[in-house]
Length: 217
Image 1 (spheres, rainbow, N blue to C red):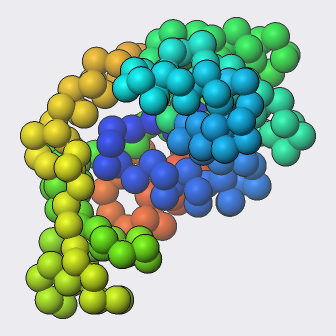
Image 2 (image 1 turned 180 degrees about the horizontal axis):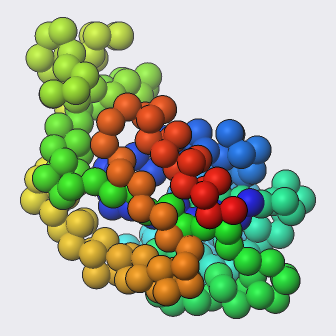
C-alpha cells in the first residue's frame, strides 16, 4: 500500500505515520528522516542539501525529490510506503506522480488529518520541552508537569521553543495553507483523498485512518 499523509503542523502526523506504517507493515518515509540520513551519510544529495541549509536557504524541490525517489527505490519499500512531509507542494506532488508512473505503480490513498486551526495553535503553543537530554515533552493543558517549569522526570528546566509561540504557529499555518493545502485538491480530483478527523485519542484517530483505507480499497 502506498500512502501520502498530510495535515497542518500539530495534527499529529508523526505519531500517526509511525502507527499506521507499523500496522500496515510498510516503511514510514519522512522528509526529516530523509534529510538526516542523507546528510549523516554524506551522500551527494545530502551534501547539496547541507550547503543550502548552512547558508540559511531553503533546500530546492529537486534535491528533496531526489532523496524521496532514492528512498522509495529501496528494497523495503517495494510493497509500499507511507510518505510523511512529502510531497509538500504541487511541484513535488506532480514529480511524485511522474516517478510512480515510471515505476508502473500508483498511490492507494491520501490521508488528510483535519484539526481546527485554534486547536493546532493550542497544541503547539502549549508545548514545553525539557532542556536536558532526555527529550521529555509536556503540555500546559494536556500533560502539565507537577511543578510549573520543572520536568517531572529529571528536574530539568522546561522551556517553550522559539518557533512554538502563537505568532510563529500562525505563520507556519499560513505557509501550510499556501503551499501544502493545494495538493489536497490536486489529489481529490484523482479520487484519492480521505479526510480523517484528528481530534480524540491517538488510537481512535489511527483506527479512523485504517477504516478509511479499507473503504477505498
